[in-house]
Image (cartoon, rainbow, N blue to C red; front, side, top):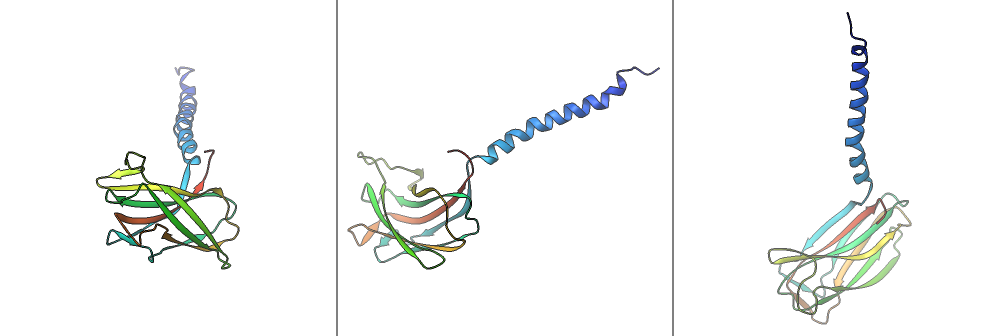
Amino acid sequence: MNNPTDCNLPVKFNILFQWLLLALLLPILFFSSCGKQPVFHEYKLINTGSWSSDSSYVFNVTINDTAVLYDLSIGVRHTGDYPYQNLWLFVKQTTPDHKITHDTIFCTMADYTGKWYGAGNGSIYTLQVPLHKHFHYNKTGTYQYSIVHGMRDDILKGMNGIGLKLEIVNGEE
């Protein structure tokens, strides 16, 4: 004779499996929907460790979606040989329709005691400096960013690289 509860076993297992699957997928969906998704992230090396004031670093970023919010930041890589607590950067943006805008960025590299900001990896430090936060691009196409330093010294020692990072902002930040 069959036990009457045996016929409910596949249904109970199916419901339990669905709840377990839901419990596993919800956190994944939640965490993947928040935060930032990188669209572009590139570094240009300064091979000599010294950045000349007449050397510009150029990044070409292709934008396909104007409906999303973006964060744009500049990455600065340097060693402890960098002689200052700050850094001035001049950023030129050229839009797909050839309109040009200029930004002047002040980067605080170290505190008053000389402790470097940013992440350290051995003797190299990386600092992400916000350029624009939570903004939309007006047009699709390729945007060109050109970065030069604006310090009084023609040659900046201790500089290893300049980068540009563009991220899509997905959730509340």
